[in-house]
Length: 260
View (cartoon, rainbow, N blue to C red):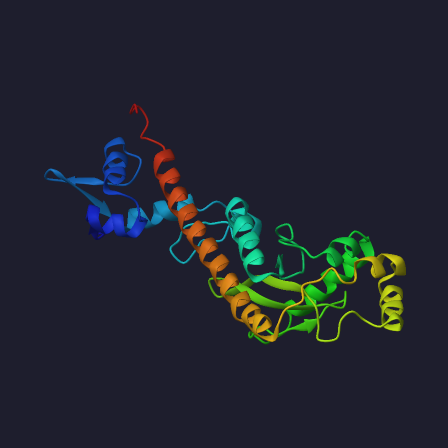
């Protein structure tokens, strides 16, 4: 005979409130039996019911519930964009959020003038994406500054969703030690990027000049910002899982002939 779960045990399994469980049991929307004046829930029937709720083509979470793992579905942009904007202004740098393929997930926060001017050229944006992809493949998990395609410094922190690296927070627009470049260096950079030298000359000083202690602070915080976003995604994923459970409980078909 199948083990009978109590309402409390089922509540812990499904992570929904007990009132919802009782309502579903009373309406026949979840496998349940009466034992005296209390509801009990056959474990095997519950497990079969859970399996039947998993739509084809979607992978269940460890708890058995399907949750979309597409990064765009997990990112609450109305929350993350202000977080990125606020941190960027506090640190005095530009912040970007990309996926692990180098694609932007939010608009740039506090962008420097040099980035805004040069990224308007499609080939420059493509070079930036190539570099972000290269940064994503860097095995080091400790943020460190590297010279970007545009000549300024950038560093990245990684966003984890469970055990996977899903995105990056990139801090950039920081002037290296010797800035601006010499005329010869600017000419080479303009040729490398395929942009008019005049555009580079007009915007080359529109970067963020930081003292060494400020640069160190950026390196400290870029991973913390990534961790904040990881936490936001995890919380959103938990809420989505709970809402999906409630939806499935509420839409479980009633026995034939029984009214709502």
